[in-house]
Image 1 (tube, helix red, strand yellow):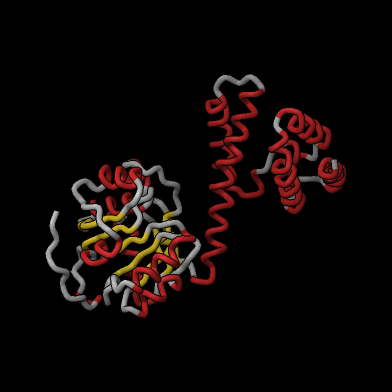
Image 2 (image 1 turned 135 degrees about the vertical axis):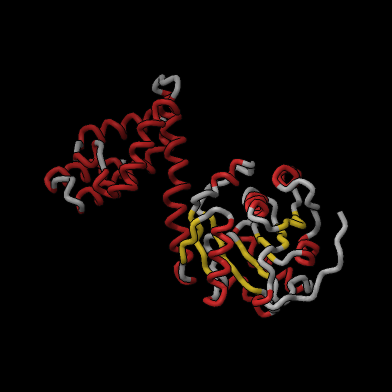
Length: 306
């Protein structure tokens, strides 16, 4: 596919409603967002990707869109999605600016949860319009991600004058914009990682232990239990706590730890840390009786020293 020469930069007030879209970093996120924008009437025109997996994703989700170097993506797009890992984002922005790829009036939107718009400061000095649009969702790198964007919350940060534009783009992708202040981005991202990333680890460990215990289909056993627990937690918070820690069953917890040490010692530290945190929250919420909490925390402290 050939390109025509880039047009002169547009004043954002005169920008047409439909945008040409480019993606720098064809990981799991970028092509899905560009495909969602395409469904809303925008036009993906270029994508960059180095690995073979990135190229396959781009071909599947953005068929016919050429794979080109990052600078060429910026040369032909009104809206550029910077969808690279968090730690790679600052260097990418500086590199694009140093090579003169950033054009005045160009919308640059990154999808990092950690950063707000200040990470785009070098590009802002070159005249770019900065947006931080972080989808609070895990991505598979397949077409199913486009469907999952419906109702997905996005952490949005932008200069006040671009707030409406940022929120409009999120809505066009099917998402729900949630405004996050610049200074709150790291805490916001930590909260999501604590819930989503650690959940995957806990579920994977639980399935391994069930297999060791002889359960043939641990996923089928855990599905209803975890689904109900998640629903209850989202509805009721700490009031949804159940189980031996919340009840103060110190003997049961001690038995758990003994079995874990025998069959899966790598899980013990995590179990103890979560048990202490659960006990603290159950105690503060009035679910765990103080006299039982003392015995329970004593067991956890003894196990930690062993």
